[in-house]
Length: 83
Image 1 (cartoon, rainbow, N blue to C red):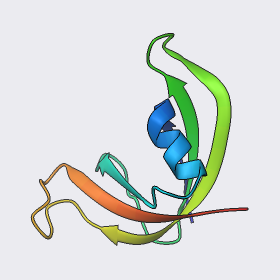
Image 2 (cartoon, helix red, strand yellow):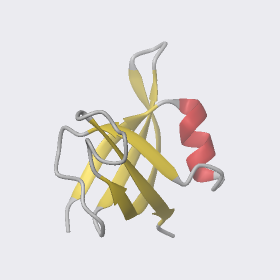
Image 3 (cartoon, one colour):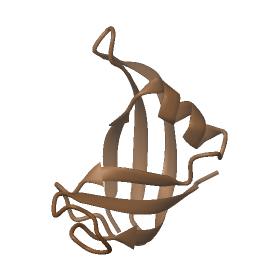
Image 4 (cartoon, rainbow, N blue to C red):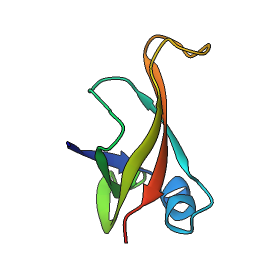
């Protein structure tokens, strides 16, 4: 299992933390896998700095890059929050 640290802007961060966003579309620039954990760190694009807010999720489903009509550089993974 790997933990991936990812920047996330405030609006999608809020949706993840209130459980309305259960997936993530990302550049396939690392080996995401089912069972991996994701540490989302909220990033403010205006100040170009982290806000200090974080949350953790587990990847529970993965559609790899280039499959099911995805471009070869994008993947989609389903997430469940870790309490």
